[in-house]
Image 1 (cartoon, rainbow, N blue to C red):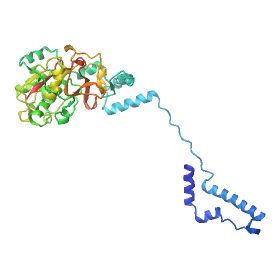
Image 2: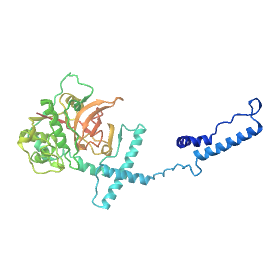
Image 3: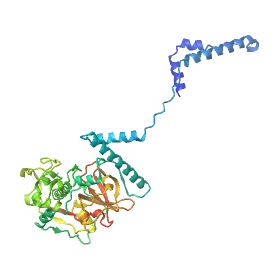
Image 4: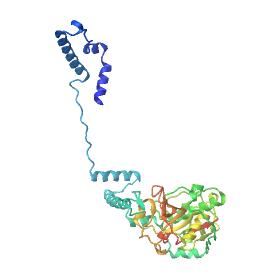
Length: 398
């Protein structure tokens, strides 16, 4: 192709006179019967040879050299890791106070990167139901991940005492009422955008806020954003412990007794507990009580999600398989399903069935939109109360 382009360019830039000089008109034969004489034939052959030589000089200059393609240097494994580390820090705005701490976090990142690669190899072999990917928790050990983000504090004696102050109702599923195979409360506008709790273990406040938003939407047709910070700051008297953990029912109790909770815009999230700054004029939602789903009853939980709306739940989120969850139906046989295993609060916004028949809960998390399926996770449903999702589920009355 390049030879053709060079020829074409040269021809276009040569004058008509040059081409006529290089390619002279064929002489008319003068011999008997219109044939060339021997001398004429020799002269013509010599002229054509000269013309071809001159054309070659014009179209392909002697000083032109063909450039050999440059073979790119192969990137080493160490260079690839270093590039991914730079991209990780940039993507998640990671800044470390000292060189030593950065080196430690880099080593954790490399180890997590290898774990994710091994896990996804198992997925490709058909041995896993879901895939993993690197996310903003890639420089954390799993125990750091748990202590910083998972704050469902069921064992707190103060919290349990506060719940007794107002005995909740128990959800009674409607008998013989058909409900759909798939439910997604996002599709009707009952769910606010996914947010990140950062390193404050205030998952319980996010779950409670989401349930209040869902019930307010069902009652009014209007979606509001409840202030998570309001719940973090103001529910210690009800047994919750701010960024150190809490429960959803005491948060509902607070909203009931306080006659409301502020909106997110006027009382934004700060990522740490502060003094209570509730302002009556900024109230966007109220509650009259709360209802618990019978512990361990997945069928009752399914009916509640289908007929009531988004429901809060507690799960075991202590495994690194969940730390780097990306897509698919989450199932890990090591996930606990006993009350003492529960350490994280979430919001169930629907359920469904995958094309391959896998049943799942559609769960809104508070790890940020970069985690999971844009902040959501599909958790195995009807799989022996997997991860304890039906152990402590509830919703507010509004």
